[in-house]
Amino acid sequence: MSDARDEIMEATYRALCTHGYADLTMQDIADETELSKAALHYHYDSKQELLESFLDFLYDSFTERVGDPPGETAPERLRALVEKVLSPPVEDDDERVAFKTAMLELKAQAPYDEGIRERLQRFDAFLHDEFQAVLADGIEAGTIRDEIDPEDAARFLVTTLDGAGTKQVAVGQDPDCTRRMLTAYIEGTLTVDGPDREPQEVGPE
Amino acid sequence: MSDARDEIMEATYRALCTHGYADLTMQDIADETELSKAALHYHYDSKQELLESFLDFLYDSFTERVGDPPGETAPERLRALVEKVLSPPVEDDDERVAFKTAMLELKAQAPYDEGIRERLQRFDAFLHDEFQAVLADGIEAGTIRDEIDPEDAARFLVTTLDGAGTKQVAVGQDPDCTRRMLTAYIEGTLTVDGPDREPQEVGPE
Image (cartoon, rainbow over all chains, first blue to last red; front, side, top):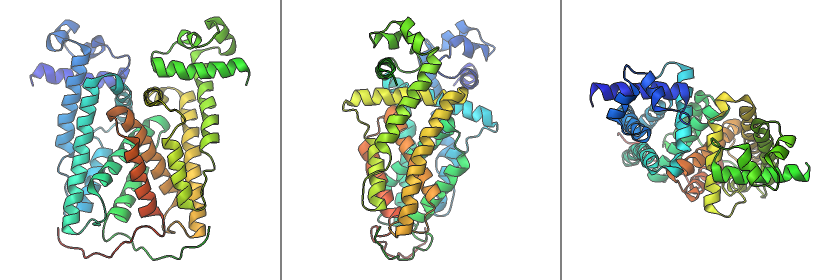
């Protein structure tokens, strides 16, 4: 990618944080660069094309940051993967929520925009496949319960993480709460040596 | 609520399905009624006020439909509650997705609109409290594992259902998949007489 394109991608990120997705214009993005709007159009024919490139740019940095999570065992690697998704490399809380909000607006465009939908599906498939691979490895190694279906459990983790992002934007749900819930799910449901499960009497309700 | 207000609420629903949230105008809503735009303004000063009333209207119908789920035992009632959330009373698939999409746009407004955020928080709190109450009853009756924290597990269920809604809009995830995942979670993790959990050897990974 050329320097100008790099600069435009960074500017798009800042413009999305400031203006959101729905009202974003090429001028807003140009204003975040040293370039004119005409120069922006030299690199990208349309806002649509620019935003699709931006999603590709995000995908590359997401997969690089999140892929192949560290850890000795599958449960450790699952927790590391959850942690990476919950802790994007942005220090400022307002900026993080502003960007998540713009991404939520963008998700609401997916039913009407095949280019956006395909790119969101790539993110979804990547994260799902990462979880699934770690779960399958863990079952083989005996650290993940062998009655777990890696595909379904991966889908569950990805869906809950998505919900946590939406809840953070919509009702201000604390990511720490999500972290605690998912840790409990990984340790209590997925992991072989999870917390003790005493047999209990089933009583009438 | 007067007949005119009822008619306006139904019209708002149809207009949201057709136009989405971001571009919705008072005229779009008036066009779905026998009323003029001026008559609409007689009932609601602004689009903001109308949309807040619409969320209150949705809340009333949601709580009536979803509250106090049927079933003999807590696990049955949890499944019934999940089912009600996943199966809104709309037969047409396109209409359902169109409305969910408009609601997702609306969630993305919450950080900038306290009236919307407060109303979304009411939905969230209602559903959370329903799950929590059923879980607490189930622990007392011995059908839900007593190491479960009802508040955390309720938060988990609500978050996953939210994620399922977002995934349906953004990447076309099938609600049947969500239903299967949540049934497995309720039966395998929350329920006392869940599937057998054979002790397993922990091997090196």
